[in-house]
Length: 337
Image 1 (cartoon, helix red, strand yellow):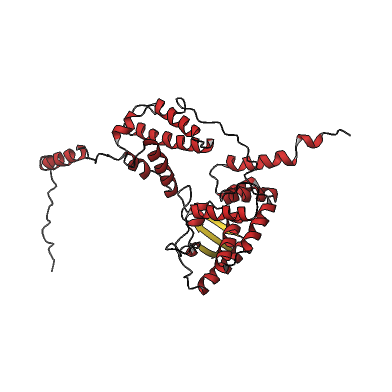
Image 2 (image 1 turned 180 degrees about the horizontal axis):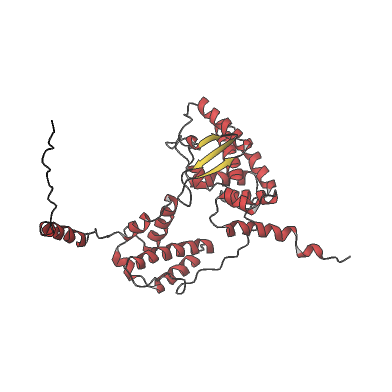
């Protein structure tokens, strides 16, 4: 018996006449411009484009200082002339600001107004370098590294602290700054969970860096030793070994809270004064010291660049070239007698 297949069902494809109304609706929707909200907050728009929280804070401080208000409007942005920027620069100089600080504030203005030009808010940047000159800064790095004799005196001053927890915290902090070359903001942002074992090495992950990208550094055994000592003492005093590594030990409401970058700077300065160090010492100088000691120990510039996470090798090479000029100096060839 032959089976007969059921009749085929032909599918009717839509014609151009059928699709016409749909195509018109789709085309109309595609060409319809999106209505974007108008930005009435130029500072907020500018800060939103920055990757690093640290950079956003610095820009916000500089720009609010220049405009003299927390709320910066589009009208205020448009009213500024290059004469205003020059007057601001000269006023900062008259108030005794360092050249590096003045240049940083000018750089904040330049960046902000570059965004305003790109966004079509204004036509010309009133802080442009061709209109407002910054101060020339000598490229030498001499004096920025802490001599090893000063380092030993600072560590000796810390060792005399009666409070065991504070002594161990600050010893670990100074070793970390010296061997790790961390910025003070990076040290302040450290959590115990950021320290991990990776094979035979101990690695610190830095979630908050100047570049805005998480980065890792290798921790030397001496740093790990002091961190372990400090962590053990924290536990004995009833603190959890989780969250912020460096906490406030002040006898006020901030006790147990994360240290700020400014607090770290004040801690370093306090021990330098107590040690009788003759020069001004800041937390950032330990970063210069890390670089200098590594190069003097024989590290290649590329190794130092990777460790300090310099974006440009030129930054590292300034340390290297400065050291080379001293090692093989022209004066070494002078023979008088």
